[in-house]
Amino acid sequence: MLGYGLSGIVQNVLVKPAVMIWPETLVSCSIFRTLHDEEESNPIVNGKYRITKIRFFVLVSCCAFIYQFLPGYLFTVLSSVSILCFVFPKNIVAQQLGSGMTGLGMGSISLDWSLIASYLGSPLSTPFWAATNIFAGFLLFGWIVVPIGYYNNWFEAKKFPIISSGLFDIFGRKYDIARVTTNNGTVLDEAGYNNYSPIRISFFFAMNYGLALAIMVAAIVHVLLNNFSEFSRLFKSNDSLKNEDIHSKLMRKYKSVPNWWYAVLFTSTLSVALIVCENKDINLPWWGLILAISIAAILVFPYGIVSAITNVTLGINVISEFVAGLIFPGMPIANLAFKTYGCTTLRQALWLTSDLKLGHYMKVPPRDMFIAQASGTFISGLINLITTHYLIRTVPNICHKDAYPWTCPSTNVFYSASIIWGLIGPVKMFGPSSIYNCLLYGFLLGAVLPFIPWLLARKFKKSLFLRHIHVPIFLMACSVLPPAAAAEFPTWFIVAFIFNFVIYQRHHWWWLRYNYILSAALMTGTALCGVFIFYAFQLHDLKVNWWGNAKDFHCPLASKPLITP
Image (spheres, rainbow, N blue to C red):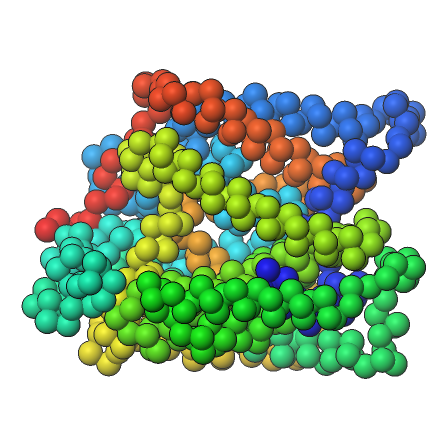
């Protein structure tokens, strides 16, 4: 709700201009028009029959539903087919490089749509130039920098798995948090910490923290360099009409959402948040809450531009954790609350803005969109809470590896971050005496890198390649690893290349007619099958134990370190 109130300040810039596409909304537009527009039952074009959009959607959804039983229940190894693991079943290096789930995914593919589109979004709705930036960043950092750093033992990397969000001590063992905490694990015990061990993390995890610092600065610099002059005109009344498209003109007949609606929603939810944060168990003071929301307010404009144009959403989780760690050292719960209010506020602001763009395309009155979204969010918050408690009670060993697929990868990353930034703090973790101190140069990297393609593009003005280099997206490629699986990236890019480049170029009519409907149908069938599998089989602990359902995906050595403790 705080994010919804915050989104009111960016509506004129991120919704009305035609250049703000919000590609993911086009998928929803396609499916809504498919379900509601009238269409000939047997359209004949140039003497050839073309299947109707609604039949295409139903057919693909049914096929996706049936197929998902394989990677989702009967043959889960299809989620990550790792060639190197099968060729070298006893070679730890080969499995570290080849595993698509706990390794770098070289030579791996995924045949599970729920995995392919899980963290990067649908490849069918991501512009090809943005997909190329993401995959190029993954190739550089995931397949070049990480192997070089790991096998050269940077940051003592060989003591730990090549990809892991876990916390370790200097000997490579799992970090014993109980030895360095007091007050029921909520406060750092300085003496215990000094007598035990500094925290160590995997090389991949450490690299991602450095890149995360670079991404935030790079996003701001990129927008200032490439979009400042263009979008500054949007604030001028003389130029506002020039940036309108046909959708904006048609939307004039509806009453816009008055600013005081956003103000009331923001102030009322802020008041509730202040009451919650004054709870002694959270330890986040009122000024800490204001600071967290201020970070989101500052970054909502540049991050919104990136999302609206590229379909890639950047996060502020690391900078929120960094700031909170400096202000509240040794207080992990306060750090978590600060991060949640900062990150989620920004994400919700962008989500509402994206939905308002959907209403913009579909000609839904803005006030109706606002009311529907606010009330729907309130209801879904309660449903999510109930569902979470239900799953915790019914799924045995939830959030552990043996509870696959209920392993909670994002939650485990969230927990590790609370220890690194909240309990230990950035001073101890990344200070001058830490081996991770060099990661702070990520700020400088993010400030400098956007200037390189910008200067080259100004010199070689006819180069389309240079104009499509997007440094923030390039840097964020590996930011979802972990909790994402490396097998997602190659398959995701292959699908994007086939549909958004090959078919777009050679069969443009098919792409215009079916591409976004295909994306929606795949997600629909896959999601429905996932719900069905849970209630029909997993809830009753009905398993199929055979070679095709190996929990380690036949890469048992991929998650092991080269140097065992």
